[in-house]
Image 1 (tube, rainbow, N blue to C red):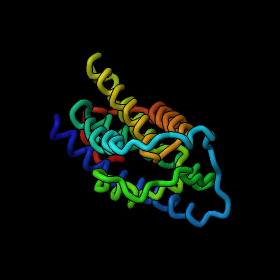
Image 2 (image 1 turned 90 degrees about the horizontal axis):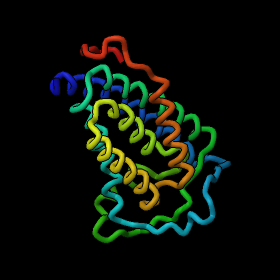
Image 3 (image 1 turned 135 degrees about the vertical axis):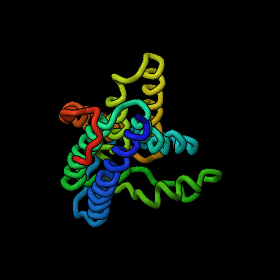
Image 4 (image 1 turned 60 degrees about the vertical axis):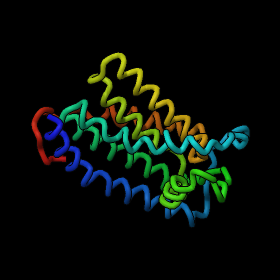
Length: 206
């Protein structure tokens, strides 16, 4: 089953990841030269402390996204890919119409953590913040896994997701409204995209 799931996961990733990279990358680039930008930040959020080690739960999303291979089936993985594509389209529409750069002034140096921040900030200028796609994808993944998990595993995944929610704020990647919007986009995409007809059969249909 793991082998079959891995095949479907790789096939889904082969189209889903480039699609996300194009939509997010284009809108992020476009926002750099936007004549008008928007802000969805509360004034008190500017006092949010920067917590360097929070980069670890932040980047742990990359591990979280792999876990459906072990808990679900090929059909559910196809569903995750389609839902992620829908979330990307919704997020891209917001980014295109309402470019909202990050309000924090990032530190030039993060001693002990520069390796992680150089990668994250090098790839993500954060010229678009609402909705947080980090939160949308985390929400999608946990929603997909939910029915497959025992009570103990559910508790573990809820705690993991909550840590990611907090991490995007304390790494100065996002603001409160970005998190709320990302959570809403994740939930909407999960419930709109239905399970494919044959959930147990490997297929290259996207």
